[in-house]
Structures are given as C-alpha cells and as structure tokens.
Length: 226
Ligand code: 5GP
Image (cartoon, rainbow, N blue to C red; front, top):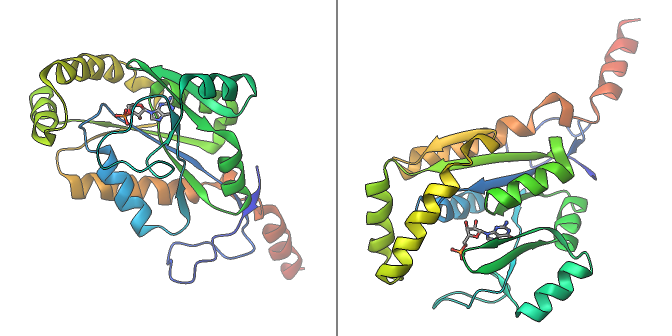
C-alpha cells in the first residue's frame, strides 16, 4: 500500500509532513434505510482526503441514479468476465444481484494519497479485511429500531410493499453480522452519527501503526539530543 502525507494546511488534525502514513480503506455498512448514504455524502463533502469507491452491479438503475457515479451498471456477462479476470477486490450476491468493488480505481486512489470510502455489505467488509487487514476500518450503522427503519424505507417512496418486506428481512440478516465490525453506531440522530463517524476516521488516521515515517522522525529527535 502506498504511503501518503496529511499535508492539508486547513486540517488542524493533520500530522507533520514527515509523518507519512498508510492509506485507509474505510468501510461503512448498514441495512438500507439506516442513513448510511447521507453520512457518506457528508463525509465526502467535508473531507477532501477521502474518495468514494464506485461499485459495479448487475441490478437495474433506479430513477435518479447516474451510471459511473452511483454504480457502474453492467450486465451479468460483463460482471462474470470481471470476476474471472480478477478485476474485483471483493464481490458478493446482495438481494438478487451481484455487486463488486473494482480493484484498479481503489489502488489508484490509494497511490494518489487518498483514503477510500466503501459503501458495501458485510460480505464485502469481510473480504476486504482478509485482503488488507490493518488498512481496513469497518463501521456498522444500526437504525434506532426496526419500526423506525421500516418507516424510513416507506418514507422514501421508492419501493413496493414486497420490496420493503424483503429489505426488512435482509436488514435482520445484515444486523446479525454486527460483530464483524470495528465500530457499531446507532443512527438516532443523523448529525451526531455523522460526527461520530468523522471522529472515527480522524482517530484512525492518527494510529501509530499507520505512521510509516515515525521511525525516521524519532531517530532525528534522538540525534538532536546527542
Ligand atoms: P443498493 O442496491 O440498495 O444500492 O445496495 C444494496 C446493498 O449492496 C447495500 O447494502 C450496499 O452496501 C451493498 N453493496 C453495494 N456495492 C457493493 C459492493 O461492491 N460489494 C458488496 N459486497 N456490497 C455492495
């Protein structure tokens, strides 16, 4: 994984430039309707050092979605070719469709010194963790209650009754994987949940094992004392 520098002068939490660090793979998962996309949007808007990974999917485009921005919409044949050409960092079946994280853009973003944000399910979080271990931070967002979750799904007005029932069933199985995450938050208030996620990202960036330039800096301090 490429080293990077937190040298954004407007960021009071940035480390000195000598403190190069490893890029982060920051995973946000939740049952749909728990508010994850609002939080992702706000994180990206507030943090120029963070870039979104755009997944490929075989599911049909929803109204308002943009190909290449929300997802790369591909057919099954293309998806299968991408799997066999090892073009995905991870992929999974979710609902009746396939979703996968294209490998090359993520590697490019890390090379360019960006942390990468992933909106993927527990299967993806597990695979990324197996692949990149300590570079992955996994955050799971819970709804305050299942009643509230259903109300949010109905409030969106985008899905039929049947789809909502399936999403609720899927939510239960998604929540069952809460213990595969480093952090579990309840989204009872969008603003405070966002602040918590942002705090996690900031603290994770400061972790010692990510500061690859630290040894050189410490040696320099040592030499100054002699
Ligand atoms: P939706 O169809 O509502 O956009 O997404 C359905 C689910 O698929 C969400 O839980 C989302 O996090 C997950 N998902 C989206 N992209 C990926 C991906 O590339 N890999 C995996 N494993 N899950 C994904």
